[in-house]
Image (tube, rainbow, N blue to C red):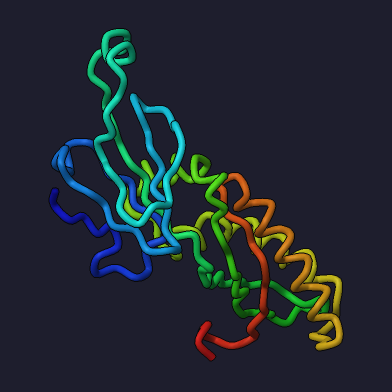
Length: 194
């Protein structure tokens, strides 16, 4: 059995979609305690495994092989997180001055929802934190714009209210992809690292 490490060399990967022709049928995938492997058979999500070593070619019963013929398998490898996702926003205060910054989201992927990430992973191949940021960016910017416009200037006492609203908006948007947002922090700086 060959060794397959799905995140090798890319710690920013949240998920990776692997087609059947990319792996040898005798390969075994190695998962960390924060990883899951979702199985896709003939294009349909069938479940997941969180074992340390995943058999990528499980044996099927004789009856199943006779009825279905050859099964085309694909895999979706996912790191459950938590993941830090920075989403840039640009809005205007009620007085017309610009309100720019970042919303830093803490996000996790529940293994029960791994199938929901499949569409994004199929189109991207490798899903990064930036891909997730891009997926929620427009909705968060729209929400932030309307929330910030209610105030003439920044009021630090109202930051918690804005954080809660942005976390809820991000959670609602990303839930379609199987991603749960657990926390949001607002940074009024020019880069997320500040």
